[in-house]
Length: 220
Image: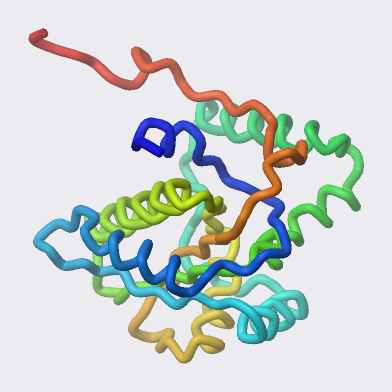
């Protein structure tokens, strides 16, 4: 698989086969991802990858817990404007519509949101965190590192789903992992596994803003 195919075939997959991900394959992917860009070569990312009983134990805790207050960080900016909210609503409509879940069906919508807690049945879950003193530039580094991981997973025939949702339980997750809450901020989870690509939840159309609305080419 070339890079273009990996980029275009990557999507947030929300249903997985009951098939374990080999440790050596994950080690190879994570070892390669170390070469992601990093300003000043800080390499601020840290992570734990869970599977099996340790993952199930964490998910049992998450299912019994309420979202923490205050939030670890704001997933949605307080000053978000209409164009960006429209993109969010469009995606939600497509995702729920693909599963036949009506907007008025609060119970089914809530049940689908709860599937985040179980990482949609993924057999492996990467949990990433980093020192609290890191700034916006280092958040960017971690995003580039995660993108490298997701593309390498595609190359290996695997799928993933980045989960900022899990930041709602950041302290619980850090406690489960033995990570110091005072000195570390939790960013997100990354569900990893072999996706069930034939299911509607993994096949609905997603739109992207036209290139010329976002990028200018000057001097060519």
